[in-house]
Image (cartoon, rainbow, N blue to C red; front, side, top):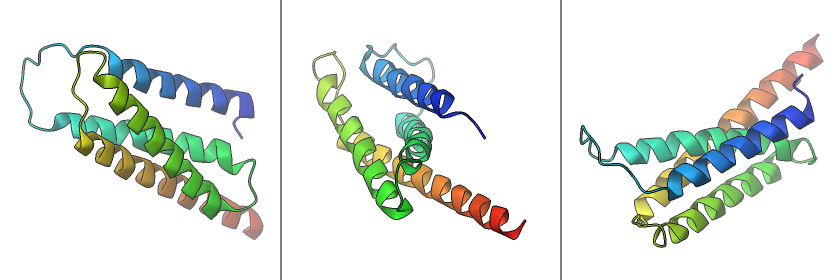
Length: 125
């Protein structure tokens, strides 16, 4: 099993990367792909939700409460970043926040499913 310190370090690194990449001015795009940033938001928050759930769940007795807390924290984080973007020359977008929500929900569900499978396998051995 991966150590708690390593899991927490990776979580913090991902969260800081999302913050920095979301707040720096965006370079002009060479190839204009419509709404590709929504996919970027979805994938970033899928990873964040997965890692945050893994870290929160270790401290909790109820996986479902951990999942709800994870999604709420991810959406709050995304909302704060969207709010701050108006001060960095970027444009806040409600659809970005919706993609953050969908990604965090998917990441949390994936982590919950993965943990459930591992626990079930450990019981069968």
